[in-house]
Length: 121
Image 1 (cartoon, rainbow, N blue to C red):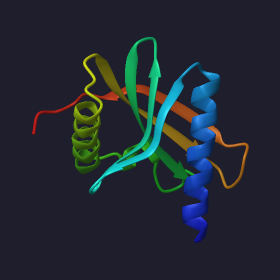
Image 2: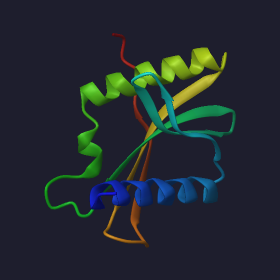
Image 3: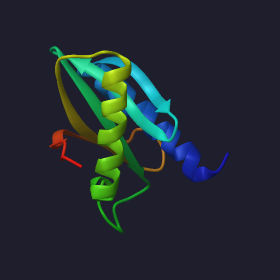
Image 4: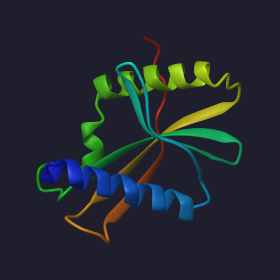
C-alpha cells in the first residue's frame, strides 16, 4: 500500500484508541453503503457520534480539520442519515472531527466535538 494510505490507517487506529480511552464505544469503523462512508461511528452518554478522521504528516500547508469543507460535510451528513435509517436509530447524534498529526506514533490528536451541524440539503 502507499505511504499516504498507511498513514491514514495508522491515524484512524490512533483515533479509535483515543476515543476508547475517552469512554466512547466504537460501533462501526469504515462503514459503507454504496458510495457513502463514515470513518468511525461511536457512542457515548446516549449520543451517537459520527467521527471524521483527518490525518496529516504536518500542519505546514493547513490544519487537518480545514479539509472538512461543505462538500465533505454534505457527504458525511448523507452517510449519517443512511446509517441512522439502516439501524433504525431514534436518538441524539452529533458530528465530531478527530485530527491526527505526525509521521508515526505517538501522534498529536485533537478532538473537535460537535464540529458542525447537519445542514439541510
